[in-house]
Length: 403
Image (cartoon, rainbow, N blue to C red):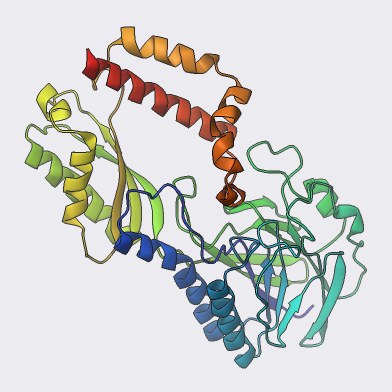
């Protein structure tokens, strides 16, 4: 069979508001809010240069069901550039940009083919080879039922590619939409499954390739690492993947050794050296600092100045520089190094552990009942656990100060 080549991209989340960045100033927020557009422009530039046979986009192109006008115009302009390069685009909408949303309509050029709310087949011919693509767009935000039965089994001729915005059945770490099993996908006899919805890049199977490319730009601390899309080549039964970076700003964690540090200026220097080294590799980034080997630090170095003051000192070192660097937080190891008494910490931890999931749901329900709550994703079990740990440390620290 003749080799075909296409780009697989998903979860663009254009015009994302970004979470957990309330402490950032207007300049920093503006840089962050532009990052999804910069990532998208990198994708378009790559596509125009490389001229793949076609592109598949698998859901959540926009961050919300209202599809901001700015995001739509930017997307339209990108599709027009692909049209000029004669690159067909096949796309489906996901749970964030479902078809029942209310938005100002913006037309798309003729090279863009949109899947309807029912699973359907679209075809094109690439150098004499018939390529059949199957997919659907979300008719509303919640598609809880499996859609796999609606995908036809592939015939013997040509290439067959499935597009599916959904998650593996039983995956409790993510909101389950359009659930499937790997075996169900394999039983369709397609040459490639282009997945979307999960923002972590991963390959679920090799025969055939069943792939999540992840999102194109991290948007908060739980979306760390370099983001991008896949350049895919299929040749009969053979397939190859090439990851292409698009992320304009990388969310990451950096561990810094405080061994040998005695004075505050030494600590600043050590942190800067570690940050500069990572920035050389990563480029622009939002970084969480984790301190280690702090045994030699004096109590006054740790406690006379507040954590916010330490963060502000580091942030000032990178203000207005390129690459963009934003210090999100500083984590000090262990409660012993923070001199938090176990007599204070343990009761607080015990109290929080006594709260069940319903207690936590009651705590945050007011946030989700607000009109902006529909744009917030529900806390995962792991995120709830992180909140418990941080809440315990904060409460114990406040009690220690009062004492």
